[in-house]
Image (cartoon, rainbow over all chains, first blue to last red; front, side, top):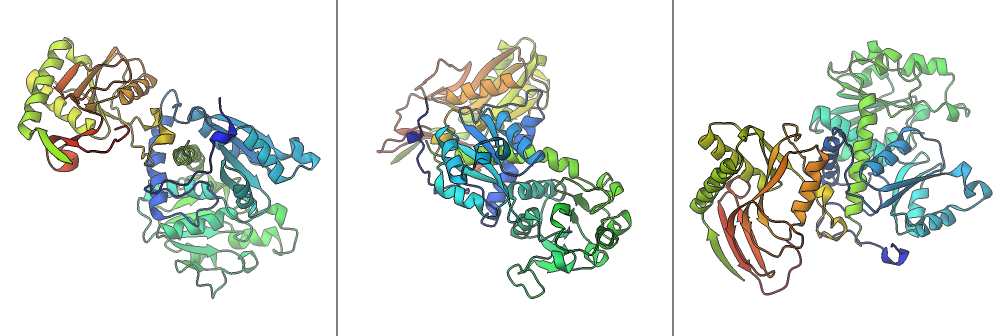
Length: 328
Length: 184
């Protein structure tokens, strides 16, 4: 029998490489922590290759997914990851719950806490919402996307996919193309890629470049801006196309989708400027024919499906590491 | 704190050779054998046993490595964040006579976890256990089929196994510390 009293606020173990009770963003991850995630993911891939993809590592733990925004792969891969590790997984969709009756985020979270959640995976349209959640619950909060701010588990699975193909990050040239402003995936990837030592080039229309990352920024010495897609792609090792968030384009940031396609679509001809073994990533869902040509999305350099597969293994690794850092 | 060497390099070599002979004697059909070393130090021990068996029986035996982190019953009470190493078994375990290899047999909990892990991979014909040191203090009904050395010990003592492959030297020592330490 579990009682909530038994779950104490847990300090990370001082001797560990891992220092997080929550996963809110990768901005405070060290290279060693990211490497621990890689190593653990490798072991989880072995589990996924078995006929029975299930180990009892998290038996007795409860994971609840709390999504205030739609999602296909993130939510599903967290639930599969939890089940593969023997944990119990339950989910709550905001529109179908008391949230629709006006329950506040904090009240919803205390309900989840009272129901015995050890890990809450949360997606919210407001940037920073998981940080507030982390202050109010003892369970570990995993940010599955908050507003435009961060999507740490997506960045970690992107990093793992790149690591599998390229090994070392030092000196790699990664190009992120598209709607950077509205992309939490881009923000988390900028932190992760630069922590690992890769050089990052952002390529987007000036209206879709976040404030603070203009030409004079000095927070990220490894990040540069190039508005011309062909110059940006020159000699790239990794090309990440970002979804053009059509639902957020009402505000006149782009003259037209057609112009965007002409100037910024990742086409086969443009990709030819990158290195011949360059990887093409996309966090999904893909708007084929808008930010990326179908031939590229399904081409030989695309690792978009590998990203989805690795997503389960990376999330298994993160859940396992988080549970290991929770003291009973 | 006192440290006493209980096995030298020669002792370890002779002991492994003797265990290799015992394994051959006990397993009439050595084609079915599969040696599985438990991370960390069981892995080089399993490889050495396989080399000895190959020398004596003129047959190459497959060797695998097993990580039991995902099957442990003490994830939340471990002091250090466990690093999961990869399990790598080169052949199917179905129908195999598996010899599980570890350095020290103590509470038996690791062996319980290892058996669960192996059975998740398929249906072996049998599972046997070979250990370099049996130090007693079992908490589960588990015993070894092949024992290098029985070393009755107190829970206050630590058995330290060093191997060339991981530590640069072959040696087993017993360390006595005054304070009580929990677990292994």
